[in-house]
Image (cartoon, rainbow, N blue to C red; front, side, top):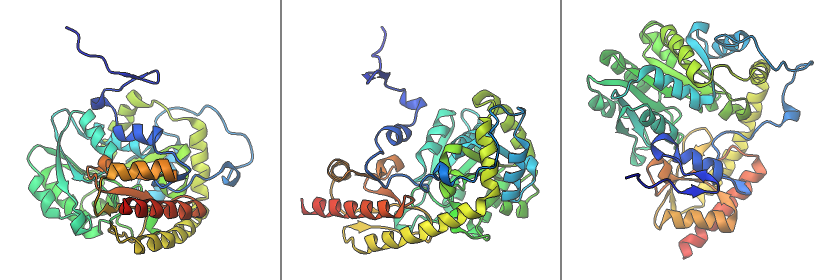
Length: 383
């Protein structure tokens, strides 16, 4: 007998949850409001401020495996050989390529908890056997290498983490990154580090994992796979310019895998990404100024809230506070429906009493959004 069919919602068949992302569905359909504190990147750069070259964009590129000028820019930006780079459609596809290149169905993958939901969704989609290591709120979301060590077995093929941490913004220091890489080498495993927020430190000494891997092993045996993009720090999400850094052999495998996923990138986006790299210092200066102003507002908001507990990271666009009491779904419904403001529900990070705040928007919007969030918290506490 045929089983029940998925219900239809607005002309769309309800998706099979084992091959979809509940978080992405929420982000695309429920995150919008007049005041959005749900995005984790910087506000988008308007076309009037984009550093265009004179002349028209070409629609079609040369094809092949990578647009050479863009590959060179990414390699120079990351300080790695060009053969260790593959451009990808944003960090999400970069993470997908990295996991698909390493994991076979049934392989063990060790993933932090909480983590960015899509990383967990990808591992499940690929048929990996997912194990977890904890990053506890009570410990400021630090990574204890012993928790990873105790989770590694002879079947572990990949360790997955974010740095800076999504959702909390916590930084994993270089010595911890190194210790994890050394563990992976001994276990014949690899470490995928999503570093899409790490450039928000605006510091040349940031603990980028691939460089640390080059110090403890050759670039051929580097245990680290690093992913990044222009989307979060630079306000260029529409370009979908992401990348993976990895050993040259692994990168070659990803190029061939991408033939099954994206084939070739949109060439106008590749050209615009090259233009962006040529003016990255200006975009970085704008990002730094915006975040400095918005962090003052965030600190003032958190200082005023007795009914929130929150680890405060040193930099970045996100924090992950915890309601001290009450039903979070009731609060989030009040915030959205009465105050026209959104944050990301903590349930997507497996911590439902929390929610994620993003402060990458324009400063006046962030200010009003935080004021409305504060008013909603007051009303919720009183009720």
